[in-house]
Image (cartoon, rainbow, N blue to C red; front, side, top):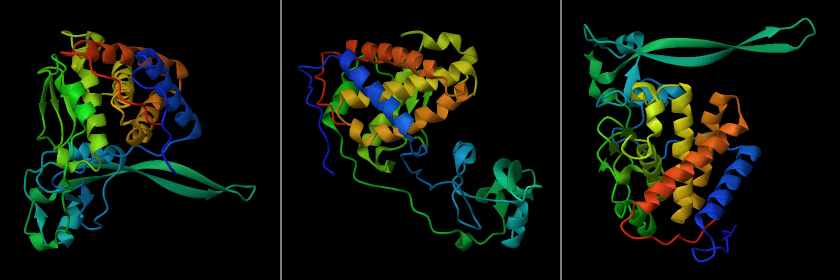
Length: 307
């Protein structure tokens, strides 16, 4: 199916119209249902996965394991380490992995009732073990492709005179409000060039909340990024709405909007699908994007919208 191009361009569409257009697109996709959010890059050491089954971890387990600074992507239980002919080194600490298991029971009316139970087990990284032949590691490759920069997306970032330092050698994306720096995985590890900019825009929108800029983070206790409290949840919505707007401004929204919406959907559930929170986040995201654009060394043209 050919791409549909919105006829409004930089000459006929102001930022307010663009924000409204992107917001409505997000709402439409939320109403129609979206696929789960997917991480758009692959870590240099490979995705965290179980060493026996070679299955990658998902959900909260993925994020917990990805944040650990081990060289190996492989994890196993104590019993699995023994089955592989090794053992866990003395003094090593395990990491909790959780999963849901459905138990079925027969009701009086003959129907089957499925009840979810939260289960957990403890895993260790391969580098925490000894005696296991490294040849037993399943084969894994880091994703690598020729990254091609996108002029409009680059222009928005590098002409922003208040842009914080960006470190392109991290294994995950983050904004550190203490040092006012952004960390990003290497550009070549992203599956698509456009997704690289979308993730970067998310982190840069975060940085506009710094006290030296718009001051949104002053409401967040001790700058606890990564927590599940109300203010952090709202901040995540602001950052992803900001990323969606910036992708629209730079003309790469077609390749990023589905993942933007999937991420937004996951955080809206925190507020029990309260539609007002999206409106509030959109307003703050607009302020953030306006700040970034107005801080540029020179005005950048709004690229043609592609929907």
